[in-house]
Length: 441
Image (cartoon, rainbow, N blue to C red; front, side, top):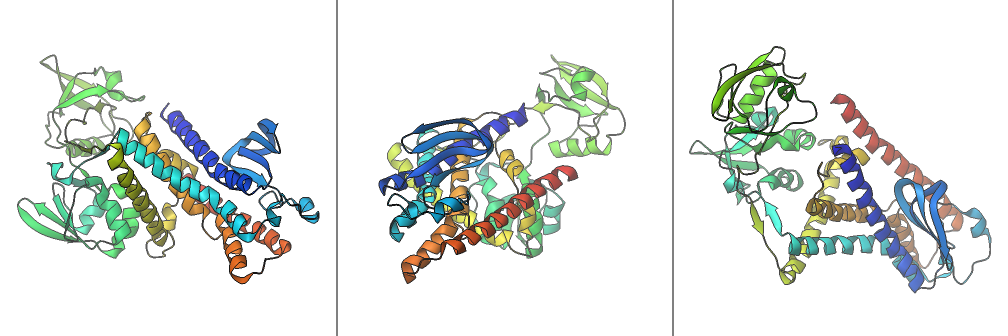
């Protein structure tokens, strides 16, 4: 069910964003009296699921949910309609319009995606506010892994600052380090102030595992609130409401110690000591292959989160600022992606990676915030100067505006083909990365 919910959220978000993007092209085309032959959500190959014609435009829903398009008369696009381009130019065609009008039409999709993201951020902040975990409220310190230990971090460290700047949002620490090339993490370790250098050699490892820093959770009280689909504990007789107090008569101070014990003893039965209605009892069970007994505990009330509330007047500048910051942070990621040292390209993901950013349970606040972020990504990706993307068309149009010389239709046709090959190669690479990650799990 979790996978289905993620897929539905992904398809809904992409559908909304495709419609917004293509409507940007459509609207400016109509403003400049340019005919739009088709307006499609998804690609209508080999045929459309639905189509209807109003005026000069055919509206429809295609079979392949990988995007959408508007087909503008007299424009060399992904349809590569050579026959139309052989005919004499008509006044209503894209190629007959002044270069500045064609430039605005091509920028329409990107502009609408960006504005749409800002509107979502403004609405989300005014409706829900912004909830985050202050670093000062991580009262038990951090939990780190082998990468963090290699850097010099230790379980229980209290993070105070990064490059001398006090930390506010705990979960923004790793993104800040990666995007802004931070050098030093300052921690409080049992009352001693320690500076932990962030060596450049750790950046590739942080990209692959951004959860290198997490909150440390105490073991007790460990009250079972639910079970996953596969649960050795439920099969052995553990009930919701039971409190786990020990394994093999060993009690734990921290939840990570409990997990480590399970993994180390996954090949043999364990004795789980429970408290049920105030009475102690022991249950024998065999952990799963990964050392999991299959219980879910409630951890929401362990830490005190903070929420910044905004009225509509306050939300407008805050939402705009959030949108610009998110765009800037995304642009910084390109340096990581194309760097041989950081090997960020290995973390590049396709549809599976995008789908996995959505929560497994439906949450409208998360959905709209993620949709806004995806809208910014769509805007940035489309403005890249790659033929077949809006940015490719814009690049040639800017050249025409500046020089007064229009590239030939044959040149634009070949550029479109090259651009489509590049895009397909990137699509295969990104989704191939997803498949490789699934195989390695």
